[in-house]
Length: 168
Image (cartoon, rainbow, N blue to C red; front, side, top):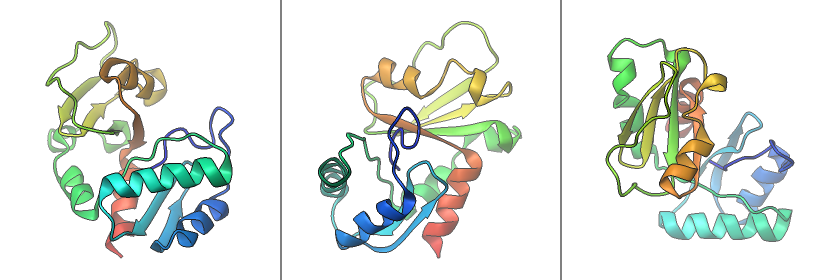
């Protein structure tokens, strides 16, 4: 997952992104919507894959973007571990913030106001935003500032679609 693609002036055509991944030798490359979701097969370790992709995007497309990688096994675990889904929350209000690494804290003070909830679990932050993600103070920028690391957020439907794509 690429952080901040096709928002804030960082425009990448999905065809260019697929070509870049294929050109680097990755297989089974597929993109989902226009926001930097790429499913692919890689035989390299995560850190090497991230560095290689970030370098190629910077060198080829001239953009400095964080790349966050999860394996299909990790995506399955994420899909099966959402505490808000298990509690019966509306899936349309659920999101996952993917972190570059596990944070060094187990809890974070949420900003005052709102009805939003979160749970940190490993390299993910599960979010329940009953008033909509557009209104939450627990947005991607909040997590990057608070945890001092790159992050990218996807709604629950996108998480499930990426898992379905990876399982094919």
